[in-house]
Amino acid sequence: MNVLLFLGLAASGASLYLEDARLTIGSVSILTNYLELLVVALILAEIIIRFTKSRWQAVFLRRHLSAILTGAGFLVLFATAKMIHLTFLGVPITREIVVLFVVRNLVLLAMALRRLKGLIDFVEYLRDHPAQTIVLSFLLVILSGTVLLMMPFTSSAGQGLSFVNALFTSTSAVCVTGLIVVDTATAFSIGGKVVILFLIQIGGLGIMILTFFTIFVLRRSVSLENKLLISYMLSERDMTQLRAMVLKIIGITLGIEAFGTVLLFIGFSRIYGYGGTALLDSVFHSVSAFCNAGFALFSESLVGFVSSPLISGTIAALIIVGGLSFVVLIDLGRNLSDRLQSAISGTRRKVHKLSLNTRVVLVMTTLLIVGGTLIIYGTEHSNSLKDYPLATQYFAAFFQSVTLRTAGFNTIPFGSLRNVTYLVMIGFMFIGGASGSTAGGIKVGTVAVIYSFLSAFFRNRKTPILFRQSISNVQILRSFTILLFGIVVVGLATILLSASEHDSTMKILFEATSAFGTVGLSTGITGTLSMFGRVLISLLMFTGRIGPLTVIAAASRDSSPGNVEFPGGEISIG
Image (tube, rainbow, N blue to C red; front, side, top):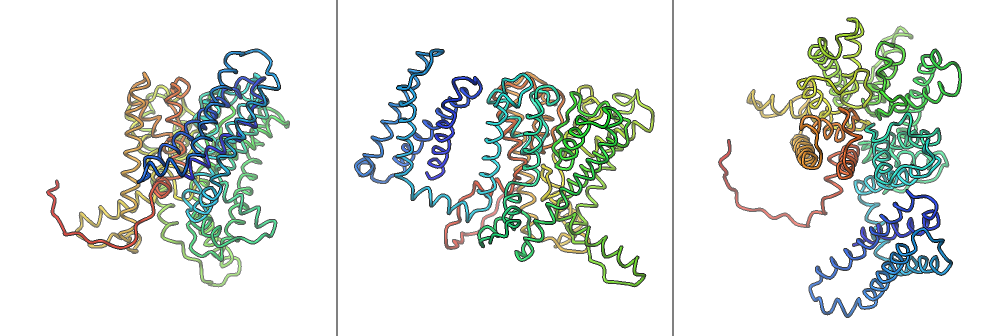
């Protein structure tokens, strides 16, 4: 109930804030209507659910009569305001009508204040449950981006995007996916491109990491609960190292993106000259590549740079580094630093040993990139790659193999690929990148754990082993849970999209997997999706970005106290 109250209050506040702007901006008027309907639905849902869950419903009605009457009053005011708006559509709104709108929202505010304790309990609940906090933070950033993209200054036509298109674009940017329903190169003004750039950066780093970075810079103290939250996000058990790790993450991100910007600026300046266009393109594509977002400022993505080692090569390198995860980059940096110092001093020093996670990520990433390159070249060298020289064919296959698991850039057209190529790409997109990175999918670590279990099973070994280290049963269970979750989500989305859209099943499966894996590659059907299809793809991108485990943790309830053991049973399987 506290969740419904919080969402209702937030929606009402946004509706009240946008009340004046709706008269001049059509897209804002549509957004306000959606928010108003959401408020009504949440109020009705809260009352109905509380009533049905009450053991003594007659007593509930007597105790909450004033709240029910207040809610009924709000619904009357809402209906009256809506009728006035529809009746006098296009007629200047008078002060009396504005007062009616304000009174309506104040009534809802009074309803919220009656449940202030519940709202405080909800905030306390979020503080103690990191998964729910992460989900809510991403939702708030997405909704904020949606409102901004509906503003006229973000559009090249000066009208702003529609609500659904703004929501889709904001979700794709924050979830660092890259799927688009409007052409990024032509539909947005410089202001709109800057908004998308910031949404990508926030989504890539994570709003909570940026928040804690600000706290550390201002030298403010961090509570134990907040340290638990950031340690949950970074998978760091030693909370004494959180400050140093957050600062390293920000430093690594800005440093790599700056280096990528310099290299890309050299490449783009040969085309546009040393000016603002080359600089904007360099910064945008560097951030988009390192955050694995896949947004490009060219209508055909990077097809025009298929044979440019400087531009395509730099973007590929940024994608690979961004898909390794910050934990792996820090661990790898310590190892390389110790080796370098040992080589410079000429003495044998103790070298930091790479963790099991780092070794698994590096090996799996290398195998997938090399394997993807050979497979794509093998299936497409006589098809989509046939018009390119041999060196360009291998380079294009390498680039697409890199982008398959993380970022949605493409240097070859995707509309005419063979079905076998689509199937291979779907498998790579479903796997994704490393845990803790900006990549989506089920993650390479999950695949490695499942492989270790199957290998041990077929060899009759009791304990799964990777690099001479055993894998716990908890990790195995989580890995299979993530695998099953991904299969169910992508499969269900494919079925629903097949019912609502008119494209082939192969292209729909490709689109759904690309959204879940936050890859952003498309066969060209994204712009033709129905409203239902765009909303569903947005949900897939959101699910893929925050991760299956976070979704499951956020949706699960607290376990009941006490352990109850039941008699064992046998089920015939196989």
